[in-house]
Image (cartoon, rainbow, N blue to C red; front, side, top):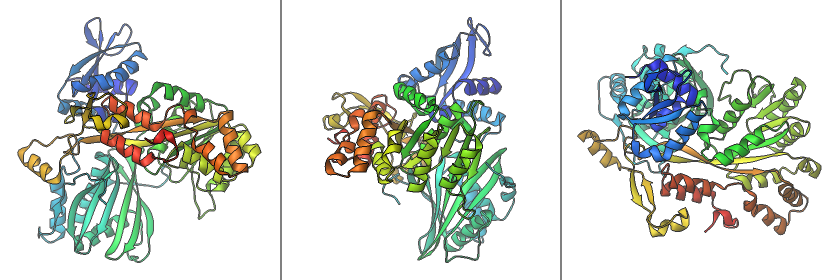
Length: 566
């Protein structure tokens, strides 16, 4: 078995823990003239273990590119996935990082079951753990934080609440839903963008669980008729965890949603996030501008904040003063002044941007543009010689341009625009353990633009009944638990503010005519790469599936814009 300290060093030098865990890949040694050794003078080969060698064609090029940056060639070996996960876990533990375990959502549920049974006085009926069909139609810390191990020593329901939070972190869950249904409570987890049922408990336990979580979030437990917001701060294995909590009174009781905020800086890497090298080069040329504005565009949950903060991390070299207005502060980055937006203190995005101008910044970050006042402040800051990185909720580049037009900026400000927009969506990745190859069907040619018979990967998605059978047989995929997918990958499109783009924006701003409106809608040829073409490349490379590409087409379809229609 490889030395965990060397593995840790090689991961930090070449990849990230999150990427290695997601792709079941780990660098284990560096060879020098045929001998295994640590990286050093004369080193020649990076030895990389892969859990599924059939994926080498998909990820091998990226691994070789990363190794070549430090002057190494690659030597690939196949290793059982469970051994790779052990190595990654050991490497992670060396720095006390939060583990993103490969266990399923349903793993280790016996402790949860026992906690609820104890809370119910030893009565097991009414407590059931569910396996979902993965159906898409299914429904900076300044405070002192307790260690979550203290909660694990509390009452049965305190233990259950803590175990739910820990499981959410380990399984890369984005949201936890505690939902009253009249006869019982359901707990659901959103993983890889898809809602999955976790377990059902009786009403008595559901009410108590909600109360425990509200107490952890410093919310008013006695108030059940009004919505509330709070947050849970806990330390876990040396890391700070943050959960945003929201309650909503409904017919059957309080519904609670817990957003899991991930602050692992190892995930902030443009080389890992952006697969297309040409688009990556163009994005880097934008973030190296001395002034201008770069809009990071996408719907809620599309990962635009991760891309934006990866860009910030890349230019955060100690030579620039970077200030950020955020709501909430999701990533804590060293060397950056991060300010929480506070309506109670009359600190809106727009007002903070104006204050930042007196702080001698080089780069200004606006977490989200929500209204015309903030949009105007972003343009003002960019025009006065600063680089602004701003988040904008929109479905794609064209929709983002229409939102900018709707803000009714004066034409002289649009003339001075520099920078561009990068829009993104997320697609689910194939499970590297259980996905299989199949030939492309004739009916899929138009969507994928690939020849008939081209081998593509297919996710091995199981129904709830099939999952239970496989679980009893011991043949359920340990990586994805029958979901067929594990993790997500971003698809991008990028548009620079060329003179042609600005002229179309100005024309529509000054005269909102059908002709000028269509001129903006038909801006697709000016894009460097649209999201559908980006997604097609991912299907071709076996990273995602045709069904995910179809879902992307539906979510980005425009009947007017030919780039997204067939």
